[in-house]
Length: 406
Image (cartoon, rainbow, N blue to C red; front, side, top):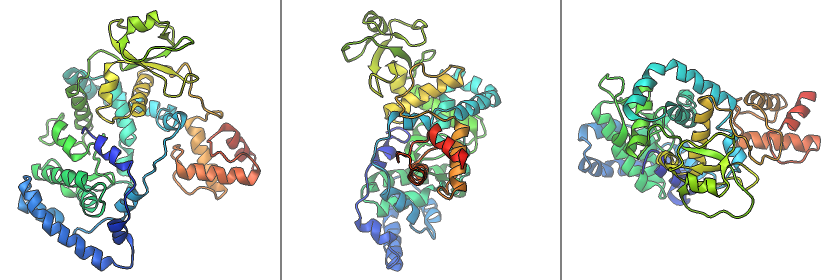
């Protein structure tokens, strides 16, 4: 499974209690530590049989302890599905576009080389970088980044739902250390083991990592050329079609339309046209019609490259967000038909202002990052309850105006 597909699919499962709780409960830490040490000793033979040297294993596992934060993250992963506007507003916004355009200028010489070598649109790579680590800013956060070996060992031992995944990834991570591409102190990733600027799980790193800057190491943590080239290599090897887009926003006629893949010309004959009024680029391309927010929201014709993006993360919303963000980084104007959002949308700076004002009133204690997660929504609802507004948790202009009057 490429990149984070395995990790993300596994994180949709809520962990059974049992052993996880045994590790988390303060009543028996000595027992938990003893069990973990026994597991580490027992897994040594499996790792060595998988190609990890005994010296690397012993060094990496010396003094290691289970990470309770990792188990808590595994236990509390949400099962709900966010509405379309919620997902896209947190990922495709003016600040992400501006940062992407700045990165395009900063890394232009390398992007020229990567695009020439792999044939993958640079704006797609920049959008993936934004989606995966906010252009590397996430890697600077100690509250998010964790030691990959420790995280995977913890999951392999303490999370029955993810143990098979974690064991495989742990062996791969140890092999990465063995190659010398990165040292253990810098082998950092998410709680589930996704690593680097563009968030590769260890097995996908082994399959796709590229030493683009030519320093002898495939360093997706510190080398932006290596990280972006690695993403480009994944997309190319999964069938990226150079010079083609991922898809088009379209307007669809009233009435029922047939499903399945058809050529652009066939869709056009059925009354489907580009929403911005421009012609399609290639009428012979096969495309699939998708309406992720229903007929009242935007509609899209997705061609082959959309499916290739899903090799990175097998979710339509993810691939669509990458495509939409890439188009805006390239200078596009965004959606013609907006999402069916039940409130007036805020800009990224206004969302940060909303968080700051909620904090000043004692409702919010998170970062002013413009991302409206559970903490921000809970704070909005608490404020709405106090001032007599409908408690929907929406980051709306209406709520911000109320806060500005306080």
